[in-house]
Amino acid sequence: MSSTITSTTPAVTRRAQTRLGIALIAPLMILVTLFFVLPMCSAIYYSFVDFDGINPNPEFVGLDNYTRMFTDPEVWHALGNNAIWIVLGTAAPLAIGLVLALLLWNVKRGNMFYRLAFFLPYVLPGIAIGIVWGWIYDPVNGWLNKALQSIGLGHLTTGWLGEPNTALYAVLATAIWASTGFVLIIFLSALRNVDTEQIDASRLDGANAAQRLWHIILPQIMPVFLMVTTITLVGGFSVFDIIFIMTGGGPANATNVMGTYAYNSAFKVSDISYGTTLALLITALSVPCAVLLNRLQRRLSLQGTGA
Image (cartoon, rainbow, N blue to C red; front, side, top):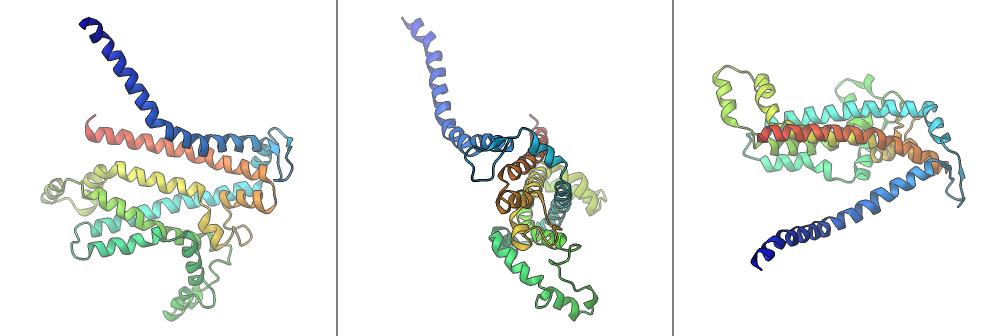
């Protein structure tokens, strides 16, 4: 009898663990299904029909929306703006945030004040940031042009958001200002785990600041560095709100990115299917990059733990 009980106990335990595992992941799977799988399936369906938002029985058009997308010059223009945003909008916050984090690393007095001051823009609503910076860039009353005039650089004043050559970079500068605080806080947290004994030893060996950063600090915070890179890079693919608020994609489509172009196609000209197809392209471009960086981050984390 005892041997029978002993032999059945592991099976009962495994079944109990299986039921517990299913119960724990069921809420997450339900949420993923409702808010990701079903919307994705719906989006794929609408990309194969011609839906204007009104007709309940849209015509099936096959790959017409995809053919139109890849032959649409505005798509390539928007992708070019996305590429500029991805490169500058990723590199600038990382570089500025890392430099500021290194400067604040050993600051004791006022450390919390600096953290709050730099992080505050990140938690502000995007619409508030867009409106305030719209005032700053105002060609007549904006303080940016007034500041340039006051220091003798009046020839540089311009309508920052009204000129096709400057509008995209003006909005991008606003986004960099808003996101740098997040990068700073994450890097400051990562720097707490850096082995300072190695840094002190490298100083005794004559290593300069750049060498200490490249050979000691960056390798130790690289998983965190990649995590922040992933977040900012994916944000460059899906950027929408700050551009929509400040320029709406203008002037003359100079700041149009895939997000604003998809929105305008879907809701301003009621071409829901084409707008959905453009949105699927954003997903198809951003997800592989995010997955690749995530795998690289996990690999580096495992190497760091010796697993």
